[in-house]
Length: 129
Image (cartoon, one colour):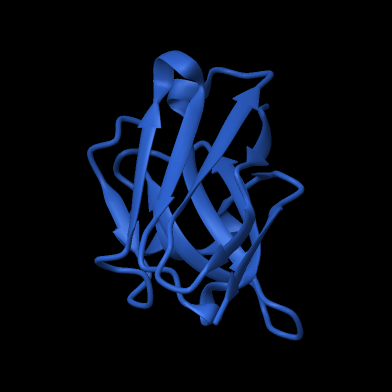
């Protein structure tokens, strides 16, 4: 198993950028699919982006396409979320999640929160108008 830990959240003005980091310890990180989810006040948790274990497959929510970029560095046991052109509606707690997933898994699996087994405690992102 792995224990994801997020960092990099904060307060930023609309149009600005933030880079979130997620470090995972306690397991073989390079075998895990990693995802980012977020939850805004009063709303359900939603999918943001995910990346396969080898970085060859990435999946983005429509709401962040063209603005957010996910990447991973398996040598550092880390995954990153570069967030540009931030909007007030991006305000949420962002969670990093991990799962062991077969390379043959349907792409839809990468979007589903219930497919992820290990979760970080979250990092707050606040975008002011």
